[in-house]
Every structure is written in C-alpha cells, then in structure tokens.
Image: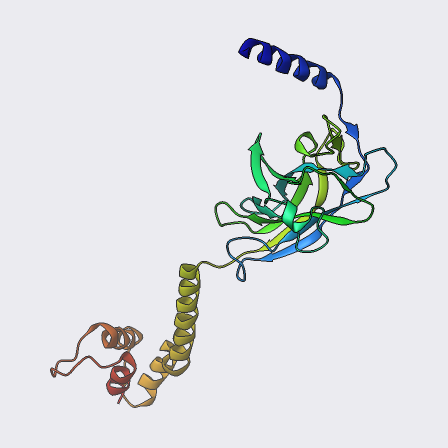
Length: 268
C-alpha cells in the first residue's frame, strides 16, 4: 500500500513538473514607497497591504481559494543591515477572504525567501472582480541595524494562487516565471543607540564648557594679564603658573578650589 501510494505521488509529480504553470488574471499590485521610522516603531515596520486586481479574461483566472506570495528585501547602494518578512495577516478592510473564513496566514521559508501563505477555510472559491486586499504584512530587521532603502521583490518561483478546481494553480499575471519582480521600496530611518546619544551629549557639553572657559580664562588672556599687573614674568614662567593651577593642590589644607578660582588668586 505504501509503495503504491509513493508510486502514484511520483507519477503525479512527474507530469505536473512537465507543465508550466499558466499565467492567471490576478495582478499583484505595487506598494509604492513605505517609510519606516524605527524611533517610533523599533521592532517592525508599519503594516503594508498587498492587493490584487484583475481583468478577468481567463476562465477561473480570477478565482482563488489559496495563495502564496514570496517576498525578498534587497538593500540599495549605501544601505546597511537587512530586512525580512516578519508577520502576515488578513487585511482589515476589503479582504479577499471573509474574516470568519480565514484562519490566519502562515509564513514559510524556502531557499532563503519568506513566503506568506493564506487559504479560505470554507474551501469555497472567491471570485475577484475589483481590487481586493490579499494580506497585510510587516518587515523587521533581524540584527536591529537596518538603515536606508530596501527594494521589495516578489519571487516568481514561490508566488502562486490556486482555485479549488486547478491542481497546478496560476502565476500572478505580473509575476511570471523568471527574474524577481519589483513591487516597491521600504525606506528605514536609523535610530541612534542610547550609548551613542550619551556620548554625543557629553561631547557637546564638554565642547561648550571648554569654549566658555577659553573665552574667559584663555592662555592668551592669562599671559596678557601677567604682564599687565606689574608682575613681569617670562613666557615659560607664565605657562608654569597656569599649569600649576590645575595640577598643584592648595597648601593651606582647604578643599580643592576650581581651576578658575585658583587662577584668579594667582594673578592678583
């Protein structure tokens, strides 16, 4: 019995592999350019709705009972990190399948490509005559480091839809067997790391303080002050006074004074 079943499956696979899946009437529509600000949504992109439309020229070509859409994210030049299909679910409005009939979409993986799979649990076909929403998905950055623009492609090898009467199913009209088909782009805005923000803040504060100090107590002003108060000193001696104000503790047992106060005391 097992051998007979295996033989039947082998024969079926042989004949179906000889037949190229026909192009159907359903067109997988483009998604345009999606903006993802990771500061507002760190874990996943906004929901992206993939829809289908049709010209209804073929018999059963605009009918489906299940589908699979494989998506690949390709970084453009200068883009960092990677994106991948993260979630897939039924569209909130104008969905291909009614809410009570859809048992949730599943994501499978083949040849490094993630595939959104859905089916009508009532086992009845749905006829598409106008634009309908096929599914809604999100993308994520596996290493949480994506930044830049990614092109989103449909992979023909794993993108098909199936009426209940068609064993082989159909290819989407604009996604025939061949190269991947561009559907749109996702532009990701980078999120600075908390440690990076802290270092940047400290650097800005330090630069501001240094600028303020030099404006009030710069070395040039100190040297001018030394010669103007009637205490002639050589250049080397003046520099030594400034240096000592920062590295030599007070000798009277008091707490350390700020460099500014000690410098003023030395120049009196």
